[in-house]
Image (cartoon, rainbow, N blue to C red):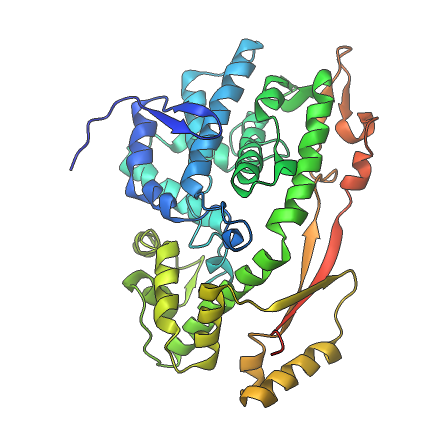
Length: 408
């Protein structure tokens, strides 16, 4: 059914009214590829820790587009020439930047599809939409791939102060109730400017930038790398890996057609065709939850138990420390599990495993956040900050974790 195309406004709990700027963007939002994002959670399994974290990639994409509109308005007001075509391309690029996310955000990238990340799939979706919309997304794709000569455009999409980060920090803070992550995105955007084709922040915006960097660090430790979320996301990945393993061995499992396809086939970046993209576009969180509800009753020890753990929030225990866990410790827990349930070492490794997590709120190596002083001087925010030592926040913090079953 064809709906009438018209400019619309959307009521957002974070920003109030979000306007859809033109007919093309309205049609992109209406497209089934984009509508799928309503069924992809923004924060994976974090709702097991923060019950309010039920918002979706759809919310986030619209919010990021809204902030991009604000940023374009501010820069044009400050005398930066941005054409109507360039503005539209920026809105499209940020709107579609996460369109390639699979169920529970990152779980598929490390389990049933190999060597392909969500950014690559986003680009495949953009290419498919570009063909469908008579090459009207070409400029947006160039900006997304950093192939357009104006560097600050790419920085607005993917940089240390991009619209993606500005929205997800504010939005995730709101929905989790973790107030430490709340950033004043409107204030930050009002301080943006362009100097020698690079995005800069006016000197008086230094405290807003400091708050942004600290908020990012706190959100990573408190929310994105929360130990319960970490365990749950590891379990979803391992659940899908096990389901694929069993399917390849000839075990018949109940699942949606789209999920079964990815469990049966060896999908890589190299063979990700348009037909596979269409199948991927039918996958969302509901496929995984529905499958788990069936897999609870499977004979396979691993599949059944991980499904129960995730559905009932009865997860593995996790320890986090600054040193690597010894192989002896890991093997001890595996042997204990093997003896208790008479399972193989391979099966035990689904429940006893270790890993690494890192947190770097601000990277001084790749691209810095530069302050623009009235004198015309450009200075890195970490050098200019007198309030807090941002250099310390630019150091990568590395921690190690180990997961194992709770003892009865």
